[in-house]
Length: 322
Image (cartoon, rainbow, N blue to C red):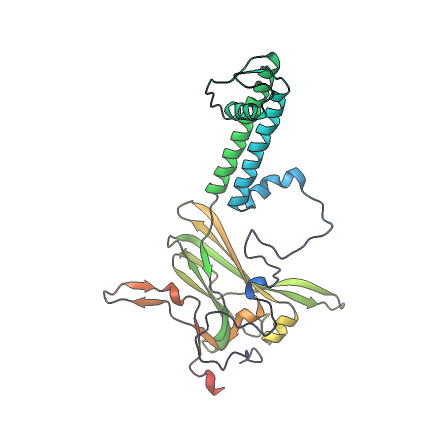
């Protein structure tokens, strides 16, 4: 092929479901990536940058996992009640119906106040206790408002369920070596005006001898679809103008390359733009392979999409004759 040395796995005949890892290489999920695929995970450790402080608190609360979010809300709720329980505890006779210096009674009275339950068994009696109750009612109003807003923002945020093939392949398409990979809309609804962009990210040497990391665009044969409903095979032709021209798996690994994919479109249900991204490392790109078919027709003439074969690849029919 015009792309250089063939991939070492080209002679195998079995259907691959995952890229073959080299001996001694880290597991696929443990390998460092510059482009993090999951918003909750990053492989970049930043040193020396100024912290965002309170300005990034809202962003951080929206991006932490749900279990972390609920633990945070629970911690704020319990902490606020413990603080006001201590303030009630300072006045032994301030809360009618509570035992003097009983932190448990003061704590549960605080829970009733901050959540506006008001069972009536315990009530503020002294001026001090009424002032603390007033302050707690105001703080509780803010906690409920903020927690409600954060939960709504997390739930209502549109997300994309786009599945990318675990591997990309380089194979001939219309006589030209081409990079191919798959994307699928797992929800089965319509993503309108879907657009995709692909870039080669890796180290490059400038004419002055400086080594730097840069993105190089990989043009797609079809970079947009009016409606993205089921599957989409994205194809980049590796001709002489392609940044991948002449590269092999070894040369891509030498420059720390990643094939970065970004896809966006308008979800017809939310009527908002959604985004998805993925990245392929050099050993996740298989030479002289083609994807297994996922579109078939059943006995009734209906079109069937078989996602069990979505990640499967197979050798080219003439791969053994090279």
